[in-house]
Structures are given as C-alpha cells and as structure tokens.
Image (cartoon, rainbow, N blue to C red; front, side, top):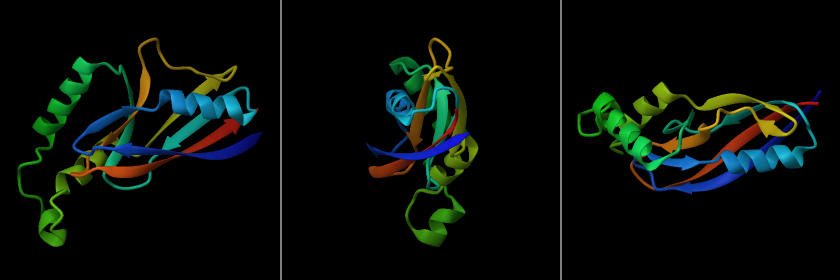
Length: 139
C-alpha cells in the first residue's frame, strides 16, 4: 500500500460559499501513481466543511437557505461574545457538516454518482484562503 499526501489551495468568499473541488481531487489522484484505493479529503479549520452533492445553482441556493434556517447567522452566539468576530454560526455549521469525506476510487476514477461532486463549503463571515489536504491511499 502507498500513501501520498497532497494539498490544494483555494480562495473562498465565505458566507456559505460552495466550491466544487472534484476536478482538483481527480487531478491529484491521476498524478499520484495509485490506481485504486481511497482518498480522504480534509479541510483544516473550524469554519468550513466538506460534502458530496449535485453541484447546480438551484441546489446551491437551497442548501444556503437550509443553513440559514437551521443555524441562523443573525442570532446571538456565545462564541461571538467571547471573541467578537461574529462568526459563531460558522463554527456551529462547520461542526454539523464535518471537515472530511472519504471516497473510493478505481482505475484512477472517483466512484461518485452520476450527479455527485465533492464540495467545500466555507461558512466564515469573510473571504478566506483555504488549504485542502488529500490523503491518497491504495495500490
């Protein structure tokens, strides 16, 4: 078994910015020399998360609306009182979505469904430069 760690840099707009990173992940798998295995995609930090969804404008809007209904950005959070950065909702949203996803790949192809893409969601209240860590494992 071989294990390779790669990093991808992206810039986000914050405010539940949803970015398709499937092509970036696929490129790193293709360049890894590993034919089949799993890739773990992880985003360090506590105000962003990762998921696999159908990346289309209607659903992106629906998901953004869902997060606002579920974890409103306009209510008071104890975190905001402690730090004054007004991003308490970002931390709560991130904890619900989670910082990683593991996806199998076969013949250098992610085994995603037809309409499924891997996305990073940045919940912070400002633009950010983010690093995505990939751990590619297999043979």
